[in-house]
Length: 213
Image 1 (cartoon, one colour):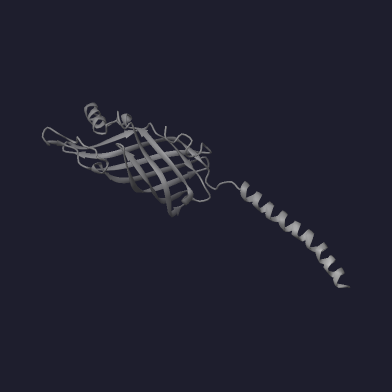
Image 2 (cartoon, helix red, strand yellow; image 1 turned 90 degrees about the horizontal axis):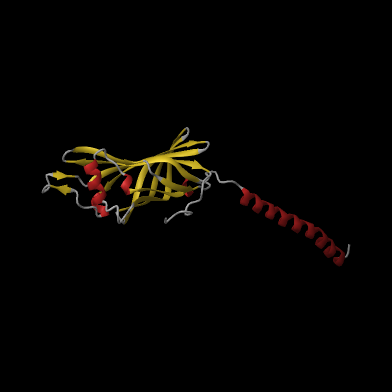
């Protein structure tokens, strides 16, 4: 076979091989684009935000069931992002006078919403349908935003994920004042324990669609 014939044969063989490689890469890209998220998006179906406080008159709990939020899923837990919030005015403690003082101290007329924004997830031990995690994010309370980490557990269901977490907060960090009355004889202490318990229905809106409202 002459040199020119060999060169022509090589071109004839190379062309279909090149086309096959291109089609294979294209098909792989389409499969990747169509691959479903292992953790889908979700919206809050139900939940509570609460806190435990301590005062000179004893301990008490403030809670609200008026919670909204969204999560953006991903290929793994570490990619999940989201937020939850609640109107400050819906917090109740079982004492009308204390509720009124609480709303005044939190300036709910100026800062009507308390919010947690999830910026990262560190997965831990797994036990069946339950996973221990640490949620990294930011609390915004009384118009002040601060970084926070919250140990939590995730319980997965076919159509939902339940998130339960607890973390201590300092009221002074959020510039919340007016916690003492009657020259300090009635006083609410600075440290509180915050509890988050929300269930996300999977397959909901993406994060940010109502953010900022």
